[in-house]
Amino acid sequence: MKEDSLANRVYLEVRKKILSSQLAGGARLVESAWADKLAVSRVAVREAFMRLAGESLVEFGEKGGCFVKKMTVEDVRDIRELRELLEVGALKILFSKKDKQLIDDLELICNDFSDMVSKGYYGGACEADVRFHERIIEGTCNSRLIAIYKNSNIPLFHMKLGAILGQMEDYLDTDQEHRAIVDALKADDWNKAYETLVHHLDRGEQEALELV
Image 1 (tube, rainbow, N blue to C red):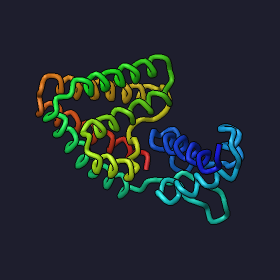
Image 2 (image 1 turned 135 degrees about the vertical axis):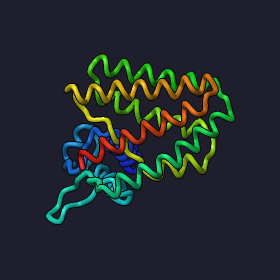
Image 3 (image 1 turned 180 degrees about the horizontal axis):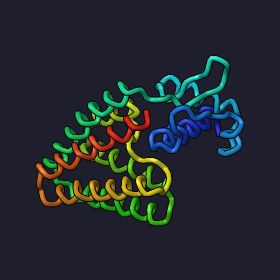
Image 4 (image 1 turned 90 degrees about the vertical axis):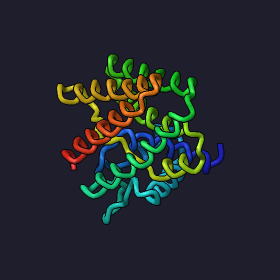
């Protein structure tokens, strides 16, 4: 496989882990460890890290080393506002489309999320959470909106890996909110979908601010 393809593979894997909160802000990314994990060269890993740095997902320390970029209070608030603009707009388009296949896809993602949580696969649950929101955007079939969303590298805010009581409540709340949005789509209940999504984003913002 060509080096650029390998670098892209590393990029996609690390990006996924960052956006799904499996790699927290400040976490060090060790080239050799990722090279071994993904069976690629350190050159490919370095290229991937450079690309991630260009997207402000990672940064290089003054004394060397690559680290997941920490979010500031301003970052959290800016991203929360951006998510509402993009996701509420996308949801509005979905209501006009009434796409049954999309609803089926969202239900499958919800089931995957629930299954992952029940088995203790919290990393997989976080990735399912990201997929849920990505699918809402993709369901619009608006190529420009999809590109803006992906290029914005919007992270998952509220989910935290683990199974202590507070975190489990977060997983359960997320499951209920996702399913409520899907049920509202099925019932053609715009107000319920809108209120649930905004509440979901508000809760995520507050959870994220507690960690900043």
